[in-house]
Image 1: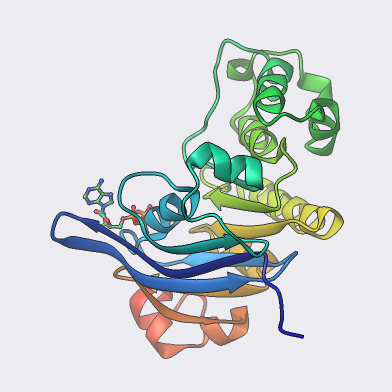
Image 2: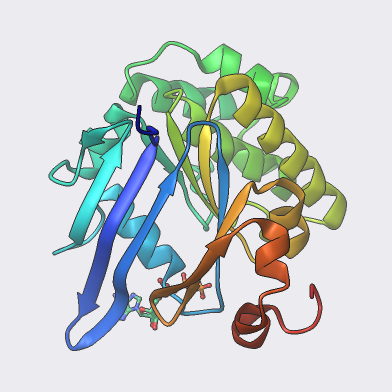
Length: 237
Ligand SMILES: Nc1ncnc2c1ncn2[C@@H]1O[C@H](COP(=O)(O)OP(=O)(O)OP(=O)(O)O)[C@@H](O)[C@H]1O
């Protein structure tokens, strides 16, 4: 029997006028896999996330979620189908409490699991405080809670460790690894923090100038001379 994939992207392409930001990008993620999507600034990582979630106009390519072709779906339809995204910039309504925000997201996702999510993200003790009133690290966990509330099949994470301390980043990384295992969650992770990437990713896809430069196991990617030249430098070689 042929292998089934939880997320399959084929020929993803996006042009802005005459500029091709993403060119014929393809990859496949197995169920429960954490895939790192890395590359230098402007490589096309956020554009790739946009095309996967149906954001913006004229995306080209095919996106399959758990075998279903969702290329024609709207952003909302993709989310309901099980493709969720957490954003690079914190996504919070500052005047609402954390519990109210998570409940709002749960209602939108037609789910009733806000308490489960608050507990999972260790937010129960601070759930009745306004989101603007908690630390930056806690706010990032609220972002993650909002993305997880619909119990997605696939979670797209855009720089979840941005602005966190090293300890907070590694704690987040361990938490994500454990979540992926316990919930059979498939994750596509865009992250500049290579400590986080190498700590939890099963495989990496490297983008360069809108194209896939290479894909492989973290150790293979780390020692690939083209990747070192284009992105990693000598730090992680
Ligand atoms: N709306 C837009 N109009 C024109 N060009 C754009 C637009 N959005 C992105 N681009 C360009 O597309 C390319 C890819 O950008 P993208 O944001 O996807 O890169 P990235 O890898 O996510 O970068 P970063 O790590 O800095 O977030 C860049 O050259 C960027 O300037």
